[in-house]
Image (cartoon, rainbow, N blue to C red; front, side):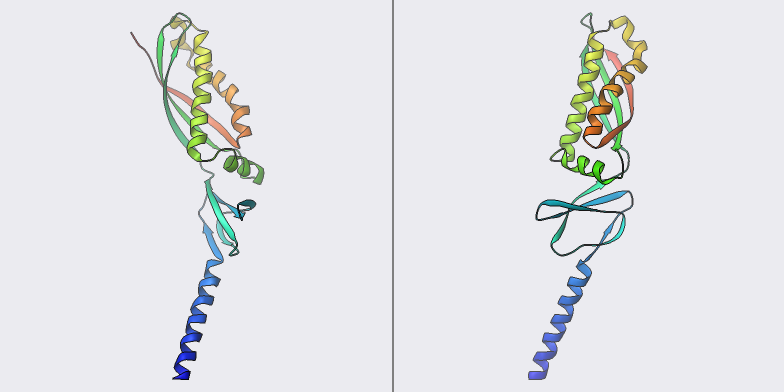
Length: 177
């Protein structure tokens, strides 16, 4: 009876040791980084592939380094009070796979949705600002100028957030009657 109890104890100890050993390893998918914190404070970044994670470390956030697209629709009013509806597509990504850019991208906003909302509001405001100084008759031929103006306004702001806007396309522009 004593031998069976000690064998059971050894088996439980071996299973527990294997669990602890296996929990030390984390796999991070390709084109993704993991942000590791210790008790809520930033500690380091896990790169793609197999990584070692101590039990007191926590992978708080996984950040994709791939390009992401955001579809936006909004309205603007021209200088001569015409209402213009815009549909745009924005292509953005993390500015660089370097630690500083990743920290900015993760910690500038409380969530990815808040970043997207801030990006949307910034683009919306920039396009509205441009359209407000332009007449309805001129606006249809100025897609490239609108995109250039918006991208110029966005580059510095978005870079401070750890991201870069790769492309902006105005996919549709219509006037309300």
